Length: 303
Image (cartoon, rainbow, N blue to C red; front, side, top):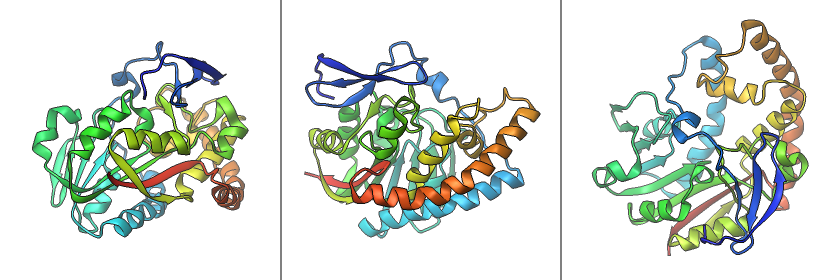
């Protein structure tokens, strides 16, 4: 983030990557010099249309609604860009609520498409920036931590905001209770896909360097809190890491597992996730009161 070269080791992740901290700007990041290229880490995928997958996505729409309410509290309507849109669920959801939505995904989006109030584009920002126009809202839901040069990207996005526009950013919180409990096995650590690990001060510093000022902090976002507690705990007992998350995301990461392995992992994940979910809500709520929630979510405006 600052260009400094004085680093200090934090720990080694269970995936074998060193997690280090810049002594100058204090940003924590993954030493990903041996990581596969982004094209391998984020392959394109098309989600299946089974009844089980539809039910899972329907249940998770409650979390999507919470995101939507957060955005609408800042901007009730207008043009919205969801940067790092994945398969486009949030952009499509907001199009259904009256926003003119664009979902931009550099890598993993399956099909580029256009529908009423919705455009999903698979391309690097630099390639399509001039054709996208200005936006009233730009959202980044757990995307910033994937970027090698966050200040450069945020500066480009700032130039795409219309007058009075807002930026909504959510990232994992390296200073959270979850991070402290699970260390190198923390689900939201996710190396080498997650290159950066933000804390409250470093996220604010990153936004300031990009020309933004934080106007609102959202301390409690159960979507990321519950997923972190559940999957981090399951990863300690199940051989296939992040099974439940990958099953829900449905991006082909479980294709190498046999049907028997999938069935056993699914049964164990469901059995374990029910009590973990119930316990995680009050724990994460208490964590949020201490500024130790699993996610840092802010609204920012150009300064």
